[in-house]
Length: 81
Image 1: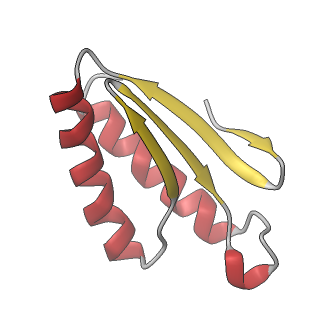
Image 2 (image 1 turned 180 degrees about the vertical axis):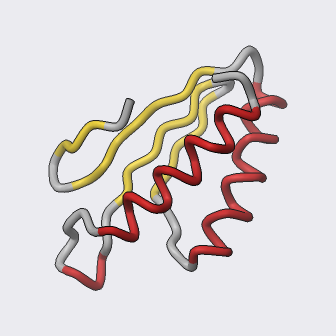
């Protein structure tokens, strides 16, 4: 689940391999573009980590971050995580 750490919503996802993780990130990128809100992310093999916060609101967590988190969760559900 998402946790708030250092003024950001954070969550990690684990996938079986790099290709699946990358496919997940591709779908998340489309959602981020649709919402015009782009996350910090990290990908190492099958692990993907996100940190969401709104830079133009003083690096705080806002409704935009929660909307993107929900969209990421929806994508993750399609990937079985």
